[in-house]
Length: 263
Length: 366
Image (tube, rainbow over all chains, first blue to last red; front, top):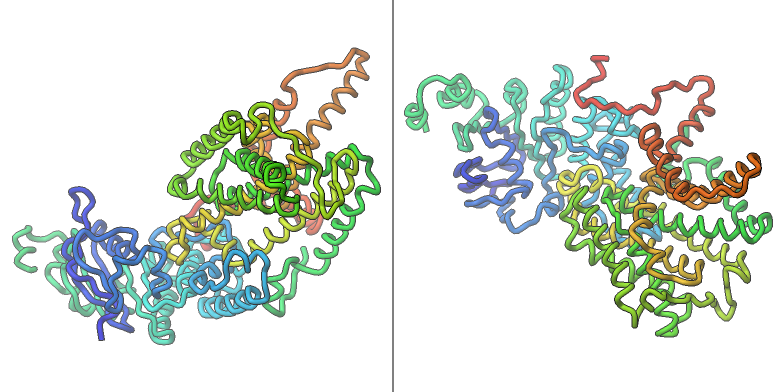
């Protein structure tokens, strides 16, 4: 069986800047896979490649063997890929409930005509959407905020709502772009529990970009370290943390010759 | 403030939040239905005009308030609706009941056609593109004389529904009820849209295109749909406007009208159905109020009639500026605040409706 997600020699450059350089890795079904690296390493770019916001210059990205490049960006939710954003991209003027309901958009079976007439079928679908969304609300303890507008919510709650919106799409693969950035210690701990539960209870594969090494090492099965668009190391959290090339990228020891040798 | 105890999803899906709210709207409906019994023919004519503007406003509201796309070209679609309706009746001999929905469809199709090249544009660029459409359509009406009658315009015949003729001057009440029926239908469709997936997709496109896309919303297609719905409804308003004014010329559909429509929904309150109605009231009744005031002032001072040209526009502009500065949520926003004040009396706090602006403030720090 092919891996859930496969990066095969993927390159992306903006003008002269190579953001992702011949990157290859695979994410297996049911694992939590973290990408770490200093700022500008190309982690978020890799995410945006999966989300099809960019076209790779070279290489292939496959989802369960299916070439992603032939799918436009809005197909991804339907294929079972959901994501959160580094800078929280919620629908600010809508309530938490509405935001989560938009996560159900991939299950929309009605069309313009049945919706403006609001046929019994549409009503029935709405009930199902709301039922599914309530499960997410229960899972993430969002009950107090159900009817609140995003624009008035604190940062930590928004982060959770965004996770909830991604979960509402019932994904196979969940992309979390810095799930713990800006969160307090307790909130980060909650996030770690949720990521565990998402993996174990829901059976969703998680791919995340994260700076908080404590969170990374506590929840992830495998870690990919990147710098300047290419792979530094790949392995268990411990292996990666003690890898010489990773230490060098973070602590800045040695010169480029050493790094090439390490690769 | 009423707290609704919800026991099923239907409570959230339903049209009204609670029974008392439904009662108020039934009362309002009874009131507007009975209005011709209370008002004279002049005021009923004005009410009809207000409803037509409210339909046009709802059309624009779907695009601007719900989907967040600017349009300074909606007078063009009023024109397309008005001319399509009259041309279909005169040239093709179609009855009103066929030509009227067709006029809406044609205006809607024109909107989708406009959307195809413009959905990639944002903000000010989209506004400029739609402004250009408004000017183009105005010029086209003048140039395409064989079709549109050029500068001379066209006469809209009486509306005939199964042999019953409706004319604004002969039976204003019937025209009012017809317009009211169309208005109610549009409101009903609009409400249904808001509580269904497409309405949420519109809001998603408005608030964040990138995450709308990540949630599986086809952004260009959703925008095109919003354009089509919006211009279609505006076209219906245009068709009614044609019958209301009797004669349609290019001067009924200038760029100024486009701008006025946009101002109307901003003053009324963006993103709400109520806003379209409040805005229409301002547009229609403000000139009346001003002329009444003018007569009163000249009566008080004993002088002849005071005619200040451009007074209406100036007052309208001042109201707009005041709203943008002091009440960005429009008349409907102000109404919500007043209502909350009384509902919570005496516990209303001044900053209840204040929006948090900072994004990096967490609850614990306060």
